[in-house]
Length: 287
Image 1 (tube, one colour):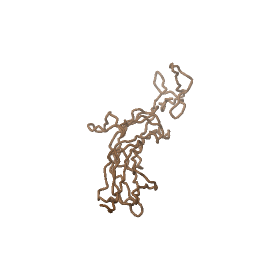
Image 2 (cartoon, one colour):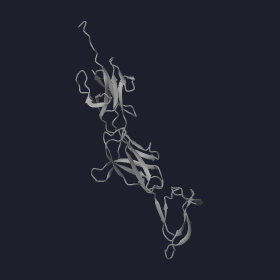
Image 3 (cartoon, one colour):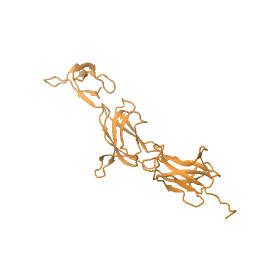
Image 4 (cartoon, one colour):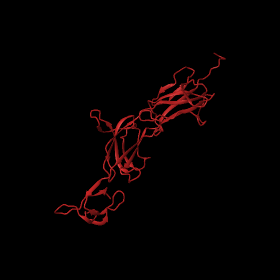
Protein backbone atom coordinates (compact mmCIF):
# COMPACT_ATOMS: atom_id res chain seq x y z
CA UNK A 1 0.00 0.00 0.00
CA UNK A 2 1.25 3.45 -0.89
CA UNK A 3 2.88 5.18 2.06
CA UNK A 4 3.74 1.92 3.91
CA UNK A 5 7.36 1.45 5.06
CA UNK A 6 8.85 -1.88 4.03
CA UNK A 7 12.00 -3.18 5.81
CA UNK A 8 14.09 -5.62 3.83
CA UNK A 9 15.24 -8.47 6.04
CA UNK A 10 18.98 -9.06 6.23
CA UNK A 11 20.30 -11.95 4.17
CA UNK A 12 23.63 -13.52 5.10
CA UNK A 13 25.45 -16.35 3.35
CA UNK A 14 27.53 -18.90 5.23
CA UNK A 15 30.02 -21.26 3.59
CA UNK A 16 31.83 -24.30 4.93
CA UNK A 17 35.03 -25.06 3.02
CA UNK A 18 38.06 -27.34 3.12
CA UNK A 19 41.09 -25.41 4.42
CA UNK A 20 43.35 -27.16 1.88
CA UNK A 21 41.29 -27.35 -1.32
CA UNK A 22 38.76 -24.58 -0.60
CA UNK A 23 36.00 -26.93 -1.78
CA UNK A 24 32.64 -26.95 -0.03
CA UNK A 25 32.45 -29.44 2.84
CA UNK A 26 29.22 -31.29 3.58
CA UNK A 27 27.86 -32.84 6.79
CA UNK A 28 29.16 -30.25 9.24
CA UNK A 29 26.59 -29.14 11.81
CA UNK A 30 26.80 -25.36 12.25
CA UNK A 31 24.85 -23.02 14.52
CA UNK A 32 24.63 -19.29 15.20
CA UNK A 33 24.91 -18.43 18.87
CA UNK A 34 24.50 -15.25 20.85
CA UNK A 35 27.54 -13.52 22.33
CA UNK A 36 27.96 -12.35 25.94
CA UNK A 37 29.32 -9.03 27.18
CA UNK A 38 32.86 -10.37 26.90
CA UNK A 39 32.46 -11.31 23.25
CA UNK A 40 32.25 -15.06 23.84
CA UNK A 41 29.75 -17.54 22.49
CA UNK A 42 27.06 -18.28 25.08
CA UNK A 43 26.02 -21.72 23.84
CA UNK A 44 22.50 -20.36 23.23
CA UNK A 45 21.03 -20.28 19.74
CA UNK A 46 20.39 -16.85 18.27
CA UNK A 47 16.98 -16.06 16.79
CA UNK A 48 15.99 -14.27 13.64
CA UNK A 49 12.78 -12.36 12.89
CA UNK A 50 11.13 -15.59 11.77
CA UNK A 51 11.98 -17.55 14.95
CA UNK A 52 13.77 -20.17 12.87
CA UNK A 53 16.24 -22.59 14.41
CA UNK A 54 19.61 -21.24 13.37
CA UNK A 55 21.32 -24.60 13.16
CA UNK A 56 21.88 -26.57 9.97
CA UNK A 57 23.85 -29.34 8.31
CA UNK A 58 26.05 -28.16 5.47
CA UNK A 59 25.93 -29.44 1.90
CA UNK A 60 28.04 -28.62 -1.13
CA UNK A 61 26.78 -25.04 -1.33
CA UNK A 62 26.45 -21.95 0.84
CA UNK A 63 23.63 -21.56 3.35
CA UNK A 64 21.51 -18.42 3.64
CA UNK A 65 20.13 -17.02 6.90
CA UNK A 66 17.59 -14.18 6.70
CA UNK A 67 16.18 -11.81 9.28
CA UNK A 68 19.12 -11.66 11.67
CA UNK A 69 19.02 -8.46 13.72
CA UNK A 70 21.96 -6.09 13.97
CA UNK A 71 24.51 -7.30 16.51
CA UNK A 72 27.49 -9.60 17.05
CA UNK A 73 27.13 -13.36 16.78
CA UNK A 74 29.20 -16.53 16.88
CA UNK A 75 29.26 -19.16 14.14
CA UNK A 76 29.96 -22.41 15.98
CA UNK A 77 30.72 -25.84 14.57
CA UNK A 78 28.78 -28.35 16.65
CA UNK A 79 29.88 -31.43 14.70
CA UNK A 80 32.78 -31.69 12.27
CA UNK A 81 32.50 -33.79 9.10
CA UNK A 82 34.26 -37.17 9.16
CA UNK A 83 37.96 -36.68 8.46
CA UNK A 84 38.09 -33.08 9.72
CA UNK A 85 38.83 -31.34 12.99
CA UNK A 86 36.34 -29.01 14.65
CA UNK A 87 36.91 -25.49 13.37
CA UNK A 88 37.51 -22.55 15.65
CA UNK A 89 34.45 -20.40 16.34
CA UNK A 90 34.00 -17.42 14.03
CA UNK A 91 32.61 -14.11 15.26
CA UNK A 92 30.81 -11.70 12.94
CA UNK A 93 28.77 -8.53 13.26
CA UNK A 94 25.60 -7.58 11.39
CA UNK A 95 25.49 -3.82 10.87
CA UNK A 96 22.37 -1.66 10.83
CA UNK A 97 22.56 -1.39 7.04
CA UNK A 98 22.59 -5.21 6.74
CA UNK A 99 26.28 -5.50 5.86
CA UNK A 100 28.46 -8.02 7.68
CA UNK A 101 31.87 -7.53 9.24
CA UNK A 102 34.30 -10.22 10.38
CA UNK A 103 36.18 -10.09 13.68
CA UNK A 104 38.87 -7.96 12.03
CA UNK A 105 36.32 -5.32 11.09
CA UNK A 106 36.41 -6.07 7.38
CA UNK A 107 33.19 -6.22 5.38
CA UNK A 108 32.54 -9.68 3.93
CA UNK A 109 30.02 -10.96 1.40
CA UNK A 110 30.08 -14.51 2.79
CA UNK A 111 30.93 -15.71 6.30
CA UNK A 112 33.29 -18.61 5.61
CA UNK A 113 34.40 -21.24 8.08
CA UNK A 114 37.34 -23.45 7.10
CA UNK A 115 37.73 -27.07 8.12
CA UNK A 116 41.24 -28.45 8.54
CA UNK A 117 41.58 -32.14 7.66
CA UNK A 118 42.35 -34.40 10.62
CA UNK A 119 46.03 -35.29 10.77
CA UNK A 120 48.16 -37.99 12.35
CA UNK A 121 51.90 -37.40 12.57
CA UNK A 122 54.23 -40.39 12.25
CA UNK A 123 57.60 -40.43 14.02
CA UNK A 124 59.99 -43.22 13.08
CA UNK A 125 62.46 -43.76 15.91
CA UNK A 126 65.62 -45.77 16.52
CA UNK A 127 64.76 -48.24 19.31
CA UNK A 128 68.27 -47.99 20.78
CA UNK A 129 68.19 -44.22 21.06
CA UNK A 130 71.58 -43.95 19.35
CA UNK A 131 70.04 -42.27 16.33
CA UNK A 132 68.18 -39.12 17.34
CA UNK A 133 65.25 -37.57 15.50
CA UNK A 134 62.85 -39.27 13.12
CA UNK A 135 64.22 -41.76 10.59
CA UNK A 136 63.62 -41.50 6.85
CA UNK A 137 62.85 -44.29 4.42
CA UNK A 138 60.14 -46.18 6.30
CA UNK A 139 56.96 -46.95 4.36
CA UNK A 140 53.65 -47.07 6.24
CA UNK A 141 50.10 -47.92 5.26
CA UNK A 142 46.87 -47.49 7.18
CA UNK A 143 44.78 -50.66 7.18
CA UNK A 144 41.29 -51.34 8.48
CA UNK A 145 40.65 -53.71 11.38
CA UNK A 146 39.67 -57.18 10.17
CA UNK A 147 36.35 -57.71 11.94
CA UNK A 148 36.44 -61.44 11.21
CA UNK A 149 39.87 -62.03 12.74
CA UNK A 150 40.62 -60.42 16.08
CA UNK A 151 43.96 -58.65 16.17
CA UNK A 152 44.36 -58.75 12.40
CA UNK A 153 44.07 -56.14 9.67
CA UNK A 154 42.85 -56.12 6.11
CA UNK A 155 45.10 -56.03 3.05
CA UNK A 156 43.31 -53.04 1.57
CA UNK A 157 44.76 -49.59 2.28
CA UNK A 158 42.32 -47.12 3.85
CA UNK A 159 41.55 -43.91 1.89
CA UNK A 160 41.17 -40.38 3.24
CA UNK A 161 38.50 -37.72 2.65
CA UNK A 162 40.05 -36.99 -0.75
CA UNK A 163 39.89 -40.63 -1.86
CA UNK A 164 43.67 -41.01 -1.59
CA UNK A 165 45.32 -44.11 -0.13
CA UNK A 166 46.74 -43.43 3.34
CA UNK A 167 50.31 -44.43 2.54
CA UNK A 168 53.42 -42.59 3.72
CA UNK A 169 57.18 -42.76 3.21
CA UNK A 170 58.93 -41.01 6.09
CA UNK A 171 61.28 -38.14 5.29
CA UNK A 172 62.69 -37.61 8.77
CA UNK A 173 60.86 -34.26 8.96
CA UNK A 174 57.87 -34.62 11.30
CA UNK A 175 56.19 -31.61 9.72
CA UNK A 176 56.03 -33.56 6.45
CA UNK A 177 55.43 -37.08 7.80
CA UNK A 178 51.70 -36.57 8.25
CA UNK A 179 48.65 -38.66 7.30
CA UNK A 180 46.01 -36.14 6.21
CA UNK A 181 42.23 -36.37 6.09
CA UNK A 182 41.92 -39.59 8.06
CA UNK A 183 38.35 -40.34 9.10
CA UNK A 184 37.31 -41.29 12.65
CA UNK A 185 37.75 -44.97 13.42
CA UNK A 186 40.16 -47.63 14.62
CA UNK A 187 42.97 -48.70 12.32
CA UNK A 188 46.34 -50.43 12.11
CA UNK A 189 49.48 -48.57 11.12
CA UNK A 190 51.46 -51.14 9.14
CA UNK A 191 55.13 -50.74 8.27
CA UNK A 192 55.71 -52.38 4.90
CA UNK A 193 59.34 -51.29 4.53
CA UNK A 194 61.86 -50.38 7.22
CA UNK A 195 64.63 -47.80 6.85
CA UNK A 196 67.86 -49.28 5.60
CA UNK A 197 69.60 -51.13 8.41
CA UNK A 198 66.47 -51.70 10.51
CA UNK A 199 63.91 -54.44 11.01
CA UNK A 200 60.19 -53.92 10.33
CA UNK A 201 58.19 -53.04 13.44
CA UNK A 202 54.97 -54.73 14.49
CA UNK A 203 51.73 -53.11 13.32
CA UNK A 204 50.29 -50.58 15.74
CA UNK A 205 46.58 -50.24 16.44
CA UNK A 206 45.33 -46.68 16.87
CA UNK A 207 42.07 -44.74 17.03
CA UNK A 208 41.13 -41.41 15.48
CA UNK A 209 38.42 -39.70 17.49
CA UNK A 210 35.56 -37.73 15.95
CA UNK A 211 35.21 -33.99 16.61
CA UNK A 212 38.86 -33.46 17.47
CA UNK A 213 39.94 -29.93 18.27
CA UNK A 214 42.02 -28.29 15.54
CA UNK A 215 44.85 -28.01 18.09
CA UNK A 216 44.65 -31.62 19.31
CA UNK A 217 47.72 -33.13 17.67
CA UNK A 218 47.83 -36.92 17.33
CA UNK A 219 51.32 -38.41 17.11
CA UNK A 220 52.27 -42.07 16.68
CA UNK A 221 55.85 -43.11 17.37
CA UNK A 222 57.05 -46.37 15.83
CA UNK A 223 60.44 -47.68 16.97
CA UNK A 224 62.59 -49.91 14.78
CA UNK A 225 65.35 -52.17 16.02
CA UNK A 226 68.60 -52.14 14.02
CA UNK A 227 69.43 -55.36 12.20
CA UNK A 228 72.16 -57.42 13.83
CA UNK A 229 74.70 -60.02 12.67
CA UNK A 230 76.58 -62.21 15.14
CA UNK A 231 80.08 -63.41 14.21
CA UNK A 232 82.37 -65.73 16.17
CA UNK A 233 85.96 -66.64 15.37
CA UNK A 234 86.46 -70.34 16.08
CA UNK A 235 88.97 -73.14 15.73
CA UNK A 236 88.03 -75.22 12.68
CA UNK A 237 88.59 -78.51 14.45
CA UNK A 238 87.33 -77.85 17.97
CA UNK A 239 84.90 -74.98 17.23
CA UNK A 240 86.22 -73.28 20.35
CA UNK A 241 86.28 -69.49 20.31
CA UNK A 242 89.61 -67.87 19.44
CA UNK A 243 91.08 -64.74 21.01
CA UNK A 244 93.12 -61.99 19.37
CA UNK A 245 92.15 -62.27 15.69
CA UNK A 246 91.89 -58.88 13.96
CA UNK A 247 88.55 -58.84 12.14
CA UNK A 248 87.02 -56.29 9.80
CA UNK A 249 84.24 -56.11 7.27
CA UNK A 250 85.02 -54.53 3.92
CA UNK A 251 82.89 -53.45 1.02
CA UNK A 252 82.75 -55.21 -2.31
CA UNK A 253 82.54 -53.45 -5.66
CA UNK A 254 79.82 -53.85 -8.31
CA UNK A 255 81.57 -56.93 -9.70
CA UNK A 256 81.65 -58.55 -6.27
CA UNK A 257 85.37 -58.01 -5.74
CA UNK A 258 86.68 -57.26 -2.26
CA UNK A 259 87.86 -53.65 -1.73
CA UNK A 260 90.07 -52.04 0.90
CA UNK A 261 87.22 -49.81 2.05
CA UNK A 262 85.82 -50.60 5.50
CA UNK A 263 82.05 -51.00 5.85
CA UNK A 264 80.22 -48.75 8.30
CA UNK A 265 77.24 -49.22 10.57
CA UNK A 266 74.22 -46.89 10.36
CA UNK A 267 75.82 -44.95 13.19
CA UNK A 268 78.95 -44.25 11.13
CA UNK A 269 81.25 -46.68 12.96
CA UNK A 270 83.84 -48.69 11.05
CA UNK A 271 83.14 -52.39 11.42
CA UNK A 272 86.36 -53.88 12.82
CA UNK A 273 87.25 -55.63 16.08
CA UNK A 274 89.47 -58.17 17.81
CA UNK A 275 87.95 -61.56 18.59
CA UNK A 276 87.62 -62.40 22.28
CA UNK A 277 86.44 -65.99 22.07
CA UNK A 278 82.77 -65.03 22.17
CA UNK A 279 80.20 -63.92 19.61
CA UNK A 280 80.64 -60.36 18.35
CA UNK A 281 77.49 -58.46 17.39
CA UNK A 282 77.53 -56.15 14.39
CA UNK A 283 74.71 -53.65 14.36
CA UNK A 284 73.23 -52.60 11.01
CA UNK A 285 76.22 -53.26 8.79
CA UNK A 286 74.65 -51.76 5.69
CA UNK A 287 76.88 -48.97 4.43
